Image 1 (cartoon, rainbow, N blue to C red):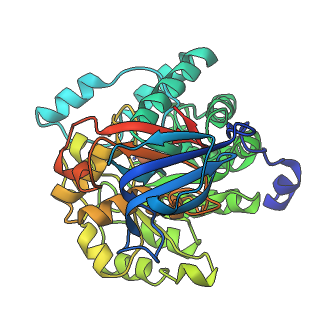
Image 2 (cartoon, protein in one colour):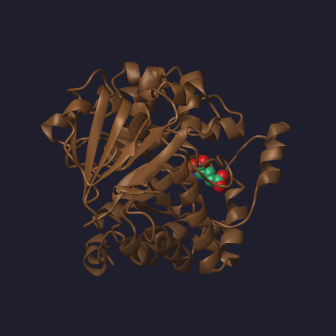
Image 3 (cartoon, rainbow, N blue to C red):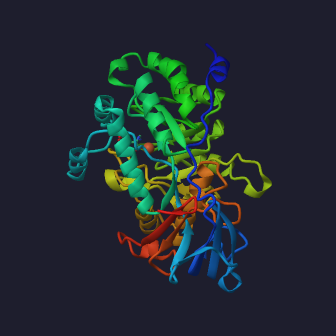
Length: 420
Ligand code: NIG
Ligand code: FE
C-alpha cells in the first residue's frame, strides 16, 4: 500500500470537545501590573503593557488596553497588581505511560550515563496497563501542568510500540489535547531487535493507519541506538503523506543528522538540539522567515532543559541559536525517564540560569515559541481573537519566574476563559 492509499484511508479527528465559557458573559481581568502580550506593538519582544486590563468573551480575548479605558463587564478578576502572561505552551511531552523509573534517575545521579535504553522498561509497563490507568496518569500530569500555568500541551505516544498500544495511547491523549503526536518510532521494541526494517514497515503501514486518526503530528527519535537517518526520513515521509506534520527528536545524545533532516522535511520543530554543528545552526537559521509574511516554513529549535538536568548532561547553547536568528522554544519533555517534570517555570529558570537566555527570551520561548513549534497562532499570545489562556502571577513581573525558582508563583489560570 502506498502512502497515498493510507492518506485516503485515514480520517482526521475533530478537536477535543471545547471548554470555552460560551454564554457566560464577559469577564474583565484588571489591576494587571504587567501584561505580557507577545504582540510586537507592545514594549519589547514580550509586548509588555503596564496598568493594563483584558476582556474575555466566549473563551477568547476580545480587548486589551489601559485599565482606565476598560469596558464594563459581567464579571471581574482583580489581578492585584500581579503580572498576567499567556499560558505556557508545552510543545513536547510524553504523558501516556505506566511505571516508575526513579531508580534509574538515582543511578544516573550516582554516575551512570543516560542512553535511552530505559524506554523499553516503560514500554513493558505501558503495555501491561489498562486504559483507565493510562488515562489517570495523563489527566494527573495534565492537571499538574495546568496548575503551573500550562494551557496548551502536546502529548506523544511512543511507549506502546504495537499497533493497538500506539492507537490507544493516542486515543487517550486526544481526549485532553489537540496536539497529539505519533511516536511509534521511539525505539525498536525488543521483539523486533534483529529486524529493524520490519519494524519500520510496521510503523509506516498498519501502525500509522491505526494512529493517524488520533494524531496531528509524527515524530521520530533519530539518534544512535534508536532510528538512523534513512529510517527516520522514511517514517516522517509516510506520516506527512497522510497529512501529519513532522517533528524530530534530534541531536540529543550526540551530533547527528536529525536536525538537518528535520529542516529538509520542513518539520515544525526539531527537539533537544543539545549537540549542534555550525551546519545544523545554519540550516535552522535558514528557515527563520518573517512570520508576518504568512509563509510558515520555520523549523523551531525546541530546547528541553529538564532532560539535561535529569541526565546530568551539558545544556544546549540557546545563545548560539538565538544569535544566529533561530526561533527557539522551551518545553518540558515530561516523561518518566529523562525528564520527569511538568513544570514550565522550572524550564524557564533553567534556561535563564544555565543556557544564557534572558528572562524575556525564555518567557517568549515558553509561550509564543511553543505556539510556533506547534504552528499555532491562537495560543501563546494575548491579543483580540486569541484563546483566553492566561496565568496571573503572585509577582509583579515575568522576571520573577526565573528570579524565584521553585516558588509556586502561578496564582490563577484561565483556560478557554474558564478559571481553573
Ligand atoms: O525525549 N529521547 C527520547 N525520548 C525521551 C526519553 C524517553 C525515556 O527515557 O523514557 C526524551 O528524552
Ligand atoms: Fe522527548
